[in-house]
Structures are given as C-alpha cells and as structure tokens.
Length: 321
Ligand SMILES: [Zn+2]
Image (tube, rainbow, N blue to C red):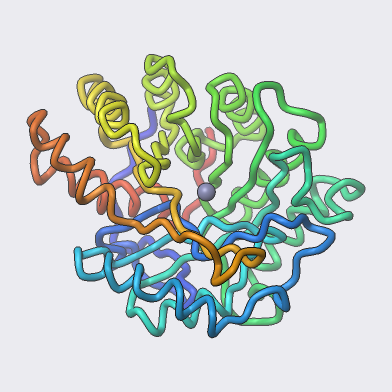
C-alpha cells in the first residue's frame, strides 16, 4: 500500500476559500444542512428561504461548535438542494468551517440527475465538475472540497459506471477526493475496479455508507487496499454495531482508514418549518463513551475525527503507478 504522510502543505477548499488541512480540526465528514428530495427536474433554490433555513439549522451548528467541532462537510449534492450561498451564510454565522462538493448523485434510479447526465459522455461531465473546481459553483467563487457521486447497488448500471469514470477523470485533474453513496461491498468493489482501471489509487475513494455492508471482513479488505471506510449513519442509532465495526478495523491495524459521521440534518423544503431536524451530536454523546469503554484512547478518537479527515480530504492527485 502507498504510504501517505500528513503534509502540512495539503489544502482543502471551504466555502470561504482555501485552507490548510491542518486547520480542519474535529471534522464531521458527512452531514446535511438541507436536502430537497423533489427531483432534479423540479428542485430550485426558490423552494426554500435562506433566512428560514438558517433560523432552523444554526442552533444545531452552534451546539456542535460548543462540543469542539470545527468543520462540517455538507454532502448534499447538486440537484438535491446544494445551495452554496446558504452554506456560506451558515458558515459565517456559526463560525464553523464548511466544505461543499461537486458531482452528480445517480442513486435512487437517477431521480437526481440533470438531463445532460444521461446524454453527455464521461469527459463532458468531468469537464463540468472540473470547471466548478477551477471557477466556482453556480456563478460564485465558492469551490468544492470533494467530489460526491451516488450509485445504486449492487451492480452498477452503465450510467453509474459513467459517473464513477467522470469522478476518476475529475480526481486525476483536480486531486479532489471521491465520496460515493454506495452501501454494500459489491458496489464498492465495482467502483474500485473502475477507479483502478483508470489509474486512481483507492486512497482517493471514500466508500460512503459502508455500514450497510454487514460482512465486516469486507471493510477490512477494502481498507487494506487504501480505501476510506465511511461509517456515517451515526445520527440514526445502532451505536454498538458502529463500535463493533470501528473496533474490528482497529484490531486489523486499520483505524487510519476509518471515517465517521452522522449523515444527519436536514431542513426539508416540503415540510412545515423544514420538518424534524436531527442534530450532529450522537458521536460525542453516544458512540465515543462506548468506544472509550472498549479501550479506545484519546489518540484513537483524534485519529478518527481529526487526522483521518485531513488525510482523506487533503487535495492531491493519488495515481496508481
Ligand atoms: Zn448523506
């Protein structure tokens, strides 16, 4: 496996510009401020009021800031409610560092893909994402800090294979890390095959929702290749099972490949007052006490919440040689 040392020169893009990864601090790598499930053909920023969303979401951000969180990665993709000016206002008003993404989400049978994702080739799609990295998103100067795509499991359709290939092209040009809504291992290994064929090292890939794979030995197998194992649904319970998965990777000597988050939130434009919002605290109030009881050290926790996010998301090209 390629060994990567943490390099203070590595940087990441926040919604307020470029920042060294050493400034990330305690980071939640997969959360959502707002998600609009209406579909790519109908979603638009007129469906929510930024003021209303901020009123709803800000207290939850201040709550985790108090706990010590410095950075939140907003994983809401384009056409699912990504609103970078809203993200910037939430960052400015909370004092948290916020990171947004580029890419398209193919999961849920392509409901969130724009028309051109069906017809354009991988190079054309990658060109759009690279342009967001080079020029900014939606006419702003705000640049993505990672790529977020999504595929349907278990077997990748031709369309979803194209999304993975576009992500590979974008990575090799920009150095942005690829997060893919995936779930079961069979889909993750399918994506890893494509990426490796395109000379992208597995350490540029975050297997998102890896907790949906029940065979924990497959987490170990992917992590040994360098893949980031994202156990990211901690907002929703099953804390002992998360602790088991993390401990299993620790025993295998692979704690340095694990990312954790809540995948929680989020303001829902179609519900009154944005509906029920799930906060971002379970890691601190529920999971960490279990891990400490199992002998995890302060150092292990910092590995999960500080070192690994910096290592996973520091922007650099990771090419197989
Ligand atoms: Zn999510």
